[in-house]
Amino acid sequence: MTKRYLHILKYNTLALLFCLAGFTACDTSVKTDNALVGEAITTKTKIKAPTVFLIDTAKSQLTWIGAKMTGRHNGYFKIKEGELHLNESQQASGNILIDMTTMQADDKTIDKASNLKLTKHLKSEDFFDCEKYKTAAFELTALAPYDSSQVKPTQPRTTPDDALRVKNPTHFVTGNLTIKDITKSVTFPARITLEDNQLKAKANFNIDRTKWGLIYRSDKSLGDQTIRPKVNIGFDIVATAQHN
Image (cartoon, rainbow, N blue to C red; front, side):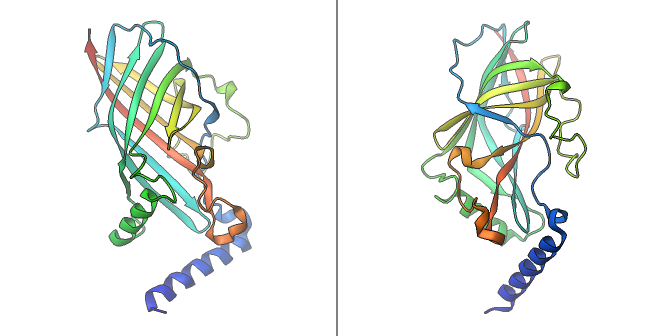
């Protein structure tokens, strides 16, 4: 065995033993709002809106955080294109197309070579199979005013991951999320603001990746080789009005 491999093995073994000794002290899962996931929503005709907001792909981003038993990794996807429709009655529709081939691991706790290796694995058939499924999509189907009473008590508003949680959410967003040709509806809190001709939307939530067929190493029986099913997703959208 190489010295580098022995070092990694020693680190992972010590980390696992520490977690087992401390039980929940080393829970690596991301503790923020869980999206409500259900069956795909059959959409009606797009709403008629006087203004279409085109997503600025250079200023918008989609981030992810995945957790294993001994730590976390994070990264991002790039948005290929998208548009949002919003009328005066707060009815909404829209689409966001995500370029899965741009997925990158961007973990500052590991070196460049490790990030490249992780990126390659995530793009492989074990996970997103980006050669076959080059895009993912989010179809906005509804907006509703945010109501804190509808947030489950099991989702505490104070956690170690509070920096990720969207502050002062304004809406519940519902839409169809399609990954690897599997579509599920998701509902999550978001902060949406409109100023002059610019719309900004920010959200952060957890989903269970296995509901989209991403089952690689999700079985807890794998012990320290388990990769947690729960994945954290962050949207930070900037869109500019295009008046009809």
